Amino acid sequence: MPSTRILIVEDDHEIARLTAMYLNGEGYQTKIINDGAIALTAIKQYQPDLLILDLMLPGLSGRDICAQARVFFNEPILVLTASDDELTEVSLLKLGADDYLTKPVRPHIMAARITALLRRSNRQQNGSETIQLKRLKIDPRKQHVEFRGKTLELTDSEYDLLLLLTKNVGVVISREECCQQLRGIDHDFSDRSIDMRISGLRKKLNIDDSTQKIIKTIRYKGYMLINE
Image 1 (cartoon, rainbow, N blue to C red):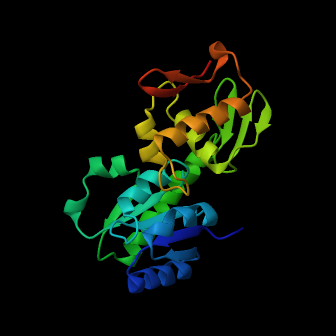
Image 2: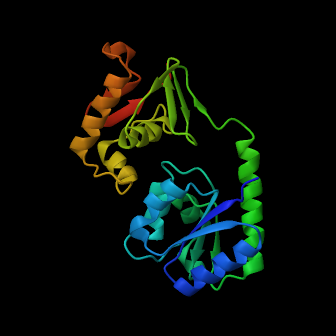
């Protein structure tokens, strides 16, 4: 059985090295990233089972990484913070993290938290991972999309946008919200580019009749994915 993969995003080289060494000794497979600017790409490429994320990073902050990663990454995120005051339980949930530890981190406590997070994640995964709507089916782990039983070939940017809308089914998402959520995930999103990607998605969904569109334009507000 393959080892559980853990991605460590930490700019302190010594902390990252010691963390990886301890976790390797516990049987985990680790990879270290020291720069926040490449963290999102690394998450997509490495596909870790758990992410350890420092908040204070060069390039892109841990807060931004956490929020943006949640568009496409469904595995546990363990945040490392320098101070208890830096995070409250409410702000932790808003970040999209599952748990956090205050530095200096005691290795055996970290290992226990990781075990608990993975156990919880495994329980959730034993259920249905697939997002199933009436006409749309998405498997986030495989980035596989079906519409009316037909597989759709989407670009990464189209897929990320569709997944964001799907996770907010029935809710209007403004262009600004789309840009904020998706910017930094290997794409240069803007209001105009959001419109273009919506148009591309609609063409691939092969729906021309406005009454049948699964993605509706709400005038002056944004877009909404409907489950009809």
